[in-house]
Structures are given as C-alpha cells and as structure tokens.
Amino acid sequence: MRIILSILLLINSFLFAVGGAGTTFLLISPGAKSQGVGEAMVANTGTSLMSYYNPAALSFLNSNSISMSYVNWLPNMPNIYGNDNYHRFISLNYKYNEKHSFGVYYINLNLGRFDDDEKYMSAVSISYAFRLSNISSIGLNAKSIYQNVLNNYADIGEHVSKNTAYDLSYFRQINNISFGMQLANMGSTIQF
Image (tube, rainbow, N blue to C red; front, side, top):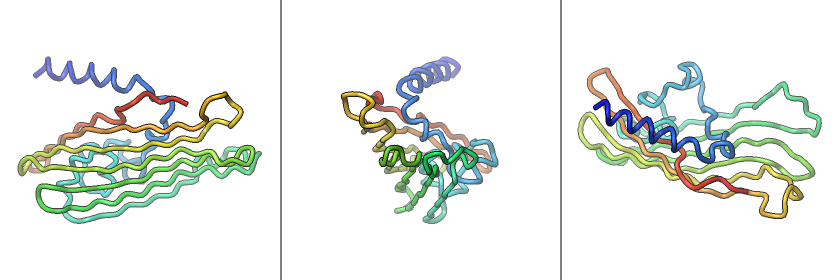
C-alpha cells in the first residue's frame, strides 16, 4: 500500500508541474462553502459543486442540483482602464439513475478591457460518474479551455490559447466517512 501511495504522489507531482501557469484561473475555488472549509471538498457530497471538485462524488448526490456564483475579483485593484474583473461559475448536476450521473460546469475569469479588447479565461467541462458499488464510484471530467490574455501585438503567433484537459477521480463512502481523490487538469501543454 505504501508503494502504491508513493507512486501516486510521484505521478501527481509530474502531472501538475506542466503547463500550470497558463490556467491558474482553474485553481480559483467557486462557492462560499468551499472557501469556508479551506477548499477541502474532494471528499464532500453535500453540494452541487461536485462536478468541479470530484466528479465521482456526483453518483452519491440525492437529487439534481444547480450552483451559480458571481464574484467581483480583486475589487481593490485600481480601475485605470475601466477594468471590471469578475469570476463567474455555474454548474448543473443530473443523476440519471443509481449507477450513472452527469454534470457540466462553466467557469470564467474576466480580466477587463485592454486596448478595446476584452481579456478573459474560460473553461467548459462535462462530467460523468459511474457508481462501482454502494460505497465507491469513479468519475471523469473533459474540459475545453479558452484563454484570451495577450495583446494582439504581443507576438507574431496566435494571441489566444485553446486547450483540452481532463480530470480522473475516485470516491468512497462508508457510513459517515468519505474518501476522495482527484487528478485534475491533465492534458496538453498550454501554448500561446
């Protein structure tokens, strides 16, 4: 067991080391509950945010759910250029039956307008959860990521980034004890 845990931690360190600087907006936690518990949500099933934190836990929800948030991001930042920075998040979760659950979420970080061009980062994700037994399930997220953060004259190449990523997750719940694990934002290298 220790060998397996060591291997998983080693793989995890390699997966998160590549391309993280370009998609930091995916690390901004949505929802007040997640902020209140220090973002320790991977083993929680009592919220509609599970498609973001651990899609495998979707199969343990008791009903369909929706969650929305809108946050004025960095409100004390000077509005020199009339910037309106905000973070938006919406998620929908649907429990098809006892074995299959689905979810979708949209996350957007608007950075304001620069040189008459709106700069933002956004991602759309589709989630699927399969219940293995009465106590465990697995899940998958597939994400499409779009970033428009560079000025058109910043370089000769493309000034937007379009990427795909995925998350793999596991959830186990016995009585009142929950265990969750997620490998998040794996995919192609972020390039502009």
